[in-house]
Image (cartoon, rainbow, N blue to C red; front, top):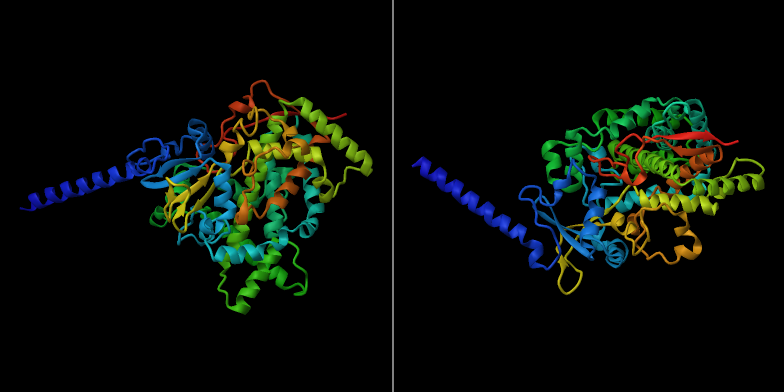
Length: 497
């Protein structure tokens, strides 16, 4: 009798699973949306651990080149947006219906769940508004002398190590860790010169993608329901413990100082938010405050460092662009009377910024922008995006579309001259996102990159090494979610005369 009941239960369960699978598999076909047949287990995510998500997005764009594509995150339907017109609707015009990211941290990981990158509305709106202060142009000027000094240390480090192979990603990660670590946590670091610091050890852990950590990140980005069950964490525990120790030490130090000191950096602003939270009973915990500094460090150090690594490697193959940049910077130096530039002067250096904009087109760290529909949203007569559906704006696909950017694999800063930039179709170039969730650290990141570029290209010419791959053949990190180098990249730094 028991055997009959058990067999009946199994048959019913398998029948239900099969029926459910048939409904899942036919979801996009019933709506007339282009798609590839899903895998019965992973859906469309068969690339995980084998290919970077940004690379996969680009391949999907090239394969379909339709306004949108249907995919499955395991068994959950999701939509890839390939159209700049639809991107504008999702990110800007109707952003109120797509106000949250799909990515999420777990309840057991408050640092991962409560940071600006993953937190949901209305908390996101409240904290975003409060965090804008340290990223205004006026506040960033306070940091320019410090960042400039770190950029000069970068040039010194290259001088010391130029006879050996310099690991570009590590070199620039050392620099960006110093810059952002001091700004976010008030921690003095010397990784730019030495390649070592306690904070640098912490940031290295962010990008050490074991199979388990890779699975954890995939869950947070594509299957957040499993994050709590498996207790995956956005940051390693050693990192969060370090963040808390540094934060508490900084609180004690700054509370001992004058309470009337004007907020200067991110840490000052966070301390002010914590104080207001206590006075107004807002309920911002220590974890909540530390989470904001942690995501600023995590999001900033790797993105700026990877962009500098990619651009330096790419420019080694374009000596004519290097020479033009060098002559431009040399003329600016002569007009200025020295190579000590202000952040405002760097922001006005047109050709320098053309080069950086082209670097961001080719190597935008966040290749796609994720959102989730709050309510049903009608796209056209055929398609309505159901509430709860994840939506991915395919930034990398549009950035490499030859219809928008001819010869897209070529590194061409002249795309961004005034006469050419005006022809770039809106919402095909979005390295910092668009709309209310545009990157809050955009100005800071650009300032960090500009100072480094000036320090390097006024002093060095970069030359490709014979055994290194061509830029189009460089491997991108397969287990990560961001567009970062997946192999050691090196060039030869030749001192300028």
